[in-house]
Amino acid sequence: MSNFIQSDGFQRYMLAMQNRLASETGIKSVEAAEAERGLKLASALAASGIPKRFSSISMAGDEKEQEFNALMESVVKSKRGVFLYGKQGVGKSVMMAQMLKALAEKSPSVKYITAIDLVMEIQSRYSKTGESALDYIKKVRTVYALGIDDFSNECIQWTNDRKELMFALIDYREQNGLLTFMTSNKTTSMIEKLIGRSLASRLYGMMDEVELVGSDRRIQAGEKDNDNR
Ligand SMILES: Nc1ncnc2c1ncn2[C@@H]1O[C@H](COP(=O)(O)OP(=O)(O)OP(=O)(O)O)[C@@H](O)[C@H]1O
Ligand SMILES: [Mg+2]
Image (cartoon, rainbow, N blue to C red; front, top):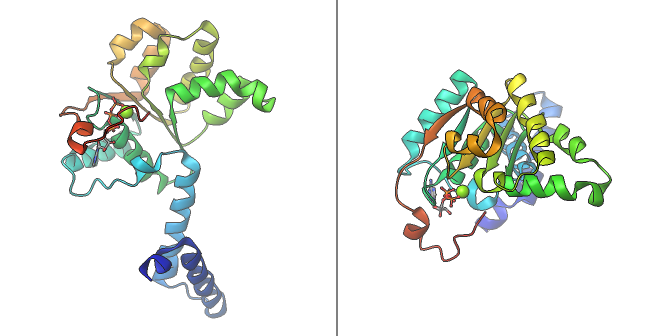
């Protein structure tokens, strides 16, 4: 029964009823406003590409809750993104996904992508859709908050073409002061050697570099398959 009440279909039905009441009486109930907000957030999250296994986690009561709150406060105040680096399994992807999720409450224009998917999208774009890689980059680069997960490994394989497209993405976001997040096992200075000074300098310019420390939470969680990127 509780599953039925929590189901999307039932929630939508209740919202439709409340909206009808609101249009007849001119009064929107607190519940209707809340439900509408919940549905908007759910559809923003569905469109964001944030994997459910990251977005379904709650930071409330977690060992990194305070760190998360402090990061969010600084993002909102400084309007700068965060470059999260640290060892495998410390929770970088979850932290970034949670920040994007919190920002989705402000604007539905939030996108999560892994660096490897970004590279693959760029490579396979034309043959799949007829849209050029640059067209794709032009679409992605305008979102309000963009998170690129697991940045470093793919940089090594970057051709000049890929570097140019990445530049078109990063430069635009830096110029326009758009919130950008990245996670990596490497620091930006290690990455600088791989991607070059001009791209790295833009990364420094638009993100605060933060190290996430701790033990491998995959081992704690007993996850067998740690290749979850
Ligand atoms: N805040 C959290 N609450 C509960 N579990 C968490 C949290 N953060 C991380 N975990 C657990 O730890 C696992 C690893 O986290 P995550 O994928 O974010 O690590 P990572 O630092 O991105 O690792 P990698 O460098 O290998 O990509 C998650 O799949 C999840 O099971
Ligand atoms: Mg990760």
